[in-house]
Image (cartoon, rainbow, N blue to C red; front, side, top):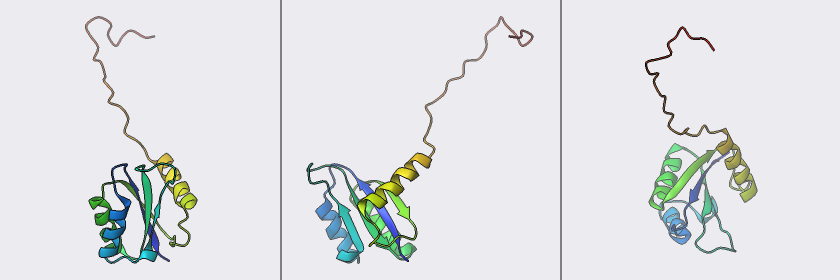
Length: 121
């Protein structure tokens, strides 16, 4: 079974260029899906590429990088036929909830002269 490399692309990225770059790098038209929103032009979009091994995954990552990918997700044991938008979105939502995001910087104020460690609250 193949794996899926999904990428989230920004507003300024051109999906036609992504399709052209994927095909020129060796992927067939049937190896990828670009999910577009018909209501909003120049909106963010999602793309999925079927990869069989690490070299294909690296190849797809480099193409994604050339097309200003915001974030990539590697989905194991999913074929391109199973990569419907809702399935991929569910996986991305679950992965995003599981990520530990950076916490804001915490400033610790040192104690000053006055109350010392012998005072109990």
